[in-house]
Image: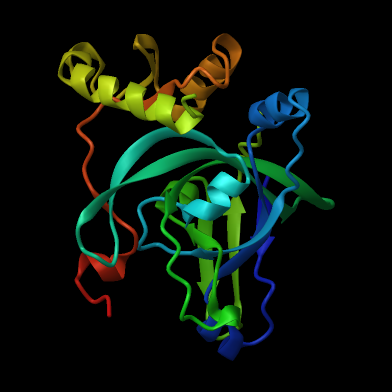
Length: 165
Length: 84
């Protein structure tokens, strides 16, 4: 059963400017949410704008976003950023909610996602150019990416939605 | 009081020390590590499922691939030193 995420942008110029951006909601995994609820904590999901980046090995968001959402840390991993020196960054367990078009209707699917938390570096970047993070090749391992510049659209297609358990 | 990140960081250090031994027989697999290797799996989702079912969320467990950690680039531009 094929599910598709389609680009929300309207023109080629917008696609050039903003890139293949995915709009969704980021939140802790179901198990972490249940543990938080038992402690009386409720953190609402965060609307996110994630740029699909075939040049990124792993998906990433800012560390402040990850900790603010209460994502579960799983491990640390060396990441090379602008400093060009490897820095140990946390990898968190998260859930990304996306609206996908199925065979007969649109469905909101909760996709498990491991995200690396990196230092915020957006201070001098125009607000509308800022994305919440990158969707890297780990995320794309489950999707076919079709980028159509002339028609101003891209889509992510999958035959196996690996939704949250 | 130790935070969850403190606990996971301590377990991650122990995991790295145990890594040479873990790679013997489990290289490339995923492990749930808490003081010692608790469970091995073929992929991260299976390792996480086991951890959720068997360990407390605040235990400080590590879920990682049994391999030597190699630095990854945030984006391709950085791999080619094109960052401004």
